[in-house]
Each structure stands twice: as C-alpha cells, then as structure tokens.
Image 1 (spheres, each protein chain N blue to C red):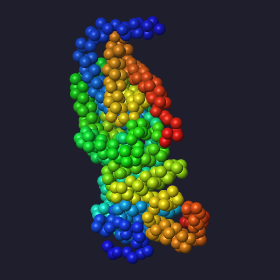
Image 2: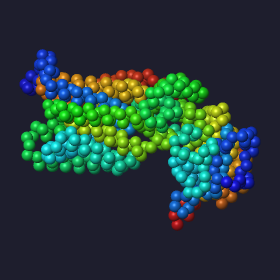
Image 3: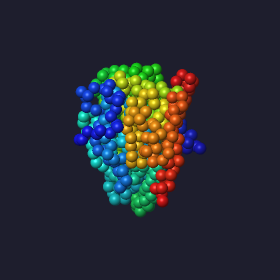
Image 4: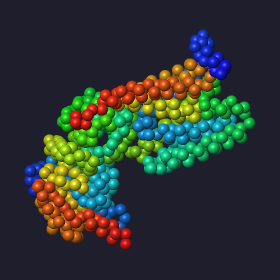
Length: 292
Length: 285
C-alpha cells in the first residue's frame, strides 16, 4: 500500500516528469508511441466494424512468440514481433475465411503461439526483465533503430490503408452489396489482417503483446459509440489512441510505473465516457416506429 | 446467336423501341454445378424499363442467375451480356439490391455513406477527389427515394423499410442499365413490401433501367411485373403473368398437379410445396 501511495504521489510530480521528458530515450519512446497511435487509431474503427477484436488478440500473441524467438536468437525484437504477427495474420486470414469457424481457428492458433512463446522465454538464459516487457510493454528499450523501424512500418501501413480504404470500408459495413459490386473480399481480408498484424507488432514495444487491444480495439469501439460517420470515426480513433498512448507514457514517467497500465486505463476511461455519450445519443436518435 | 421463337416474346417490349441493346441478353445459357444443370438453353432478352420477376423454388438457380449477371459466376456454356457488353465483375452498368438484414446500431455507417459506397465503393483509394460532384449525386439519389430526412442517421437505427429505400438509392445512384434485386422484400411487412416494390418499379422506369426481381412471392410485385421467368428443377418458362401463372403452365413446369387461383387480385398457388418435398426425397434415394 505504501509503495502505491508513494507512486501515486509522484504521479503529479511535474518536475520529475518535465525532467524525464528531456531524455532522448523518453523522446524516442514518445515518437514510437505516436507512430503506433496513428496507425492503430486509423485501423481501430475497421477492426471494430469487422468484429476482429479476438483476431487482434490472437495476432498479438503470435507477435509475442516472434519477439521471444528473436530474443533467444539475439535478433531484433521488432523484426521478430513483425514476423510473428504477419505469419499469424496470414494464417488467420487464410484459415478463417469462413466466419463460422474463424473464432475457433483463432483460439487454436493463439494458445499454441502463446505456449511456444513461453517455451522460448524459458529457454532464454537472459535476465527476466526483458522477457516480461514483451508481454506488458516497456519503453526504455526503444532505441533509434527501433524508432526508424516503427515509423517506417507505420508509414507503410498508412499508405496501403489509404490505397484500399474505400473497398475495405465497403466490404466491412456492407458485405453483400460490396461482393455484388466486385469488391475482392478474398484479397482484402488477408491484406487487412496483415496491416493489423504489423500495427500489433508495433504495439509490442510500448503496451506489450497482452494489452495491445487497448490501442487496436478500444479507440474504435469508443468512436463507434459517438458517431456513425466513417470519416469522423477514423479521426476520433486516432485522437483517442494518441491520447491514450502518449498520455499513458507521460503519466507513467514520474512514478516509474508500467506504461501499459496507464495506457489501458486512459483508453478505458475514454471508452466509458464515449459509451455514456453514446447512450444519450442513441436514445435521442431512436424515434417511435410510426415515424417510418 | 440464333434468335429464339419461343412463347417468350414479350408483349411489354413493344413499348421499348429496339434502338438500344437489350439491358440483359442471355443466349444458350447453361449453368451446372456437377453433372446436373440448374438451367440450360436459357435465351432471355430484358429491355430497358422492363420489370422481370424471377420465380422458382429454393435451389432452382435464381440467385445463381444474378451471380452470372454480376460476373461472379461464369456460365457453363452460352453467353451473358449486359447493355451490349459481356457480363463482368464490378460493372458500373449494374445496380444490386440485397435482402434487408438487421444492422448493429453502432456500426459506423449512415444512409448517405451507403449510397456513396454504391457510387464508388468498389474503386481503390480514399476518394478525396470529386467530392462535390459525389455529394450532389448522393443527395439527388436520396431525394429521389425520399430518404433525405434520415440519411445521416446510423443505418442500424432505421426501420427495414427505410433501409430498403436507401438500398434503392444505393443501387440507382450510378445510373445503371440493370437493377438486380435479390429478395429485397423479404422480412418487410406488407405495407413496406408494397412501398418498396413500387419505388423500385417507379425509379427503374424513370431511369430506364431493366429490373430483374428475384422473389419467391409474386403477389407484392404482381401489378408491376411485365414478364416472369419461372425456374423449376432445370426447366423454365418465360412469359407474361397471364401466360405463366396458370394451372396448365405450372403443372407442366413442376410435372405435377399445380392449381393457380386468382382471388381478389392475388394469386394463390397450391401443390408446389409437396412437390419440393417429393423432389428432395427422390434425390436422396
């Protein structure tokens, strides 16, 4: 209790925060987080519209497996996470095309990947702090090479998303007519899964594999509560994700607490507020059936 | 390309002059999954402004016919042409109206978005160019179906009838030559069935689009129908409602005793359900 009290006391110690913000490793972490927030916020409304929360979770577990493998082999954790997430996304995209079995396919792959990841970590003779951070996130480890990889991936995801955005939105919100109009869902579904996979792998750096849903799903779910416009939902998704990830890092600095805790709490608070607003909005928008 | 001299020549097409290509043209069309054809030897011309109802029991290939015209399903043999060109995937010449489905109230899509996607949703990119022209087209389409009032509400909060009105606008916004409707009245109540089917017919006539209307229930659209394509178990019959919806014609199609009675402007068909059941049993044995 005492340590918690102390930590919370430090939460509002702005001097410490301001001091820490001058350190290059903090600035790099914030840069990486901003790139992540931009990508995950832009993807989140589509993730929600396509009901892919569980798929994001499954992808994140395999990003963790990839990162654990990279750690053991002495390779870049970022590249490992990317590899794991992309393999997961392709597996989910190819095996789970039929909606009816998607759920169980994800469950099977997710648990296997997590198990392999745990085995890889156990085989690793390194100190444990690094291992734990793969799951729940840590910003100290981000160096300039990582920032370059992160921003490069973020830009690539955003460019591809811009190219396929319209047919992807069409297939997500109106699948029957989109199929009739020739939108190639069989290409777009795995492609979107890969975009989500890359974004998820980026999340392993900051919030960690377990809590990446806080950035890939929650901002989109919150936005969907307060607007029905796809464009506004995307803008809000980015704003919410940035607020959660940047705010979470800044708040975590002074107490030295885990970043992911603050990111997820902020994200959840935003969601709750939007739900509240949304309930009022939906009630007001629902008219008596006679008005049809 | 031999012209057919079946009983299928449409009296209604006398109104539509021959200066245009038919909106839909099938010649010797055959579709089979495996050895047994869904239908074969199908010759069909549907002219601009014509309303063709496609009837038949489940599994008779009604929806497959739409998929052929949408370019999603190749014919086993024969040709399918839309407005003079071959049927192809993603054609701007076709509008499509699906069944009404329930939509999650928090799905981020409004009626105006739906109509906009009907215009250019199958194109790549974000769609930042030509926004003004796009907005005007969407606004006109919404006005034409009297849906402007609720076009900015979440789709999931609208009634089934309102959603289907938006579907009509979505299908017609690109000014297609053919309107393909796949059971658009299913799950609507009677009043909405009548409204939506009239709207489809009126809009199609105004824009000169031909309508292929797949349905298992002829009565809501009976006053609007010019011709009927009736598919049963690989056989088919094309003609006006008076030619096709008779006890003799349907008995021949179903190869069993089917009775058609006209009661107060409604058609009552008896004897087909038992037949379906009988076929299933015959196939299984």
